[in-house]
Every structure is written in C-alpha cells, then in structure tokens.
Length: 179
Image (cartoon, rainbow, N blue to C red; front, top):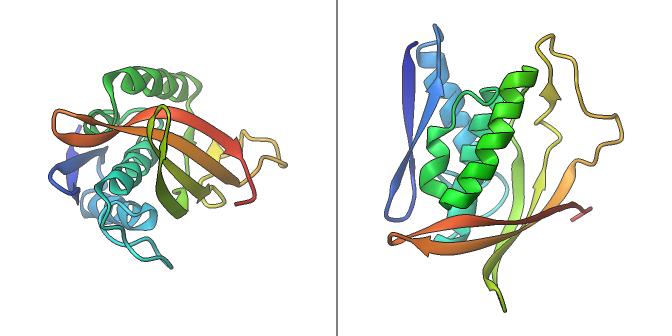
C-alpha cells in the first residue's frame, strides 16, 4: 500500500507523520499538512500565537499524531512513537486496535484552543483546552458513534517529560470542560 510522509517540525526533532494513502497520492499530503496546521504541529494554531516553549510544542505534536491515528481508523501508529513514552504508546496502540476492530475513524481534527505549561509535584504538566466539533468519530457507514450530547470541549492535563533528549507526552487526564 502506498504511503506518504509529511514532516512536522518539532524543536530538535522532525516527526514524520506517515499516513496510509492508498490511491490518494498528493491529496494525502495536502490533507496531512492541513491536519498538522489545524492542531498546531507545524506552525501557529489558527487564531493563536505559536509557542516558543518546547514542552508545549511536545503536546501539539502529540495531538497531531493522535489525530492522524484516529483519522486513519487506527491503521497509522508509527507517528505516535516519537511524541510519547513507550508506556503511553502501548495504551494508545490499544485504542488504535479498537478503532480497527470496530471499523471506526474520525472525519476531522481536534483544534487546540490554548495550551500552557505548569509545574506540579508530579512533574511538568501541559494544560490544554481542545475542541472536537470537527472530529466526529464514525463507523464504516459514516454514522456517528457518539451520543448527540457528547461534549466537544475537553481539558487535557498531560505530563510531559524528557526522553532521549526530547520532550514527549507521558499520559495524564482528559475531562469534559467548557474551557
């Protein structure tokens, strides 16, 4: 199956997002680049200034990689490894397997509205608000699988740590929030 790679610039690491393109060719590259721009992976977030903070950028790259996995229906997971710890990768891989087995995928991308770094007793935390209005989870027939009242605003509290000289996400919590 053909693949297309879209490099997403990180502070000291270039994260390659590999999307399964089948026969889509250049359209795949455009869609992946558009997705990266929407969630802040390769530049400033729409409507917000970009971050000079490598810790916050690690979170943005995590969101890009996660969105690519969900849009691919769990087929594309290699882009997750450089942006998260092995333990979190194992957990997200289980989610990808569920997407594959249930034939689910997302039709759009989440949009990070804001993100900031905080220091807590358990390490460096990125608090971020994101919107899932455009990221519908659908089945193979394109029918939404989430209840109509599913919240669209979420607050992430994600631990970020250094791993082999780069900042990566190590898990945390996500709660519905009108942030």
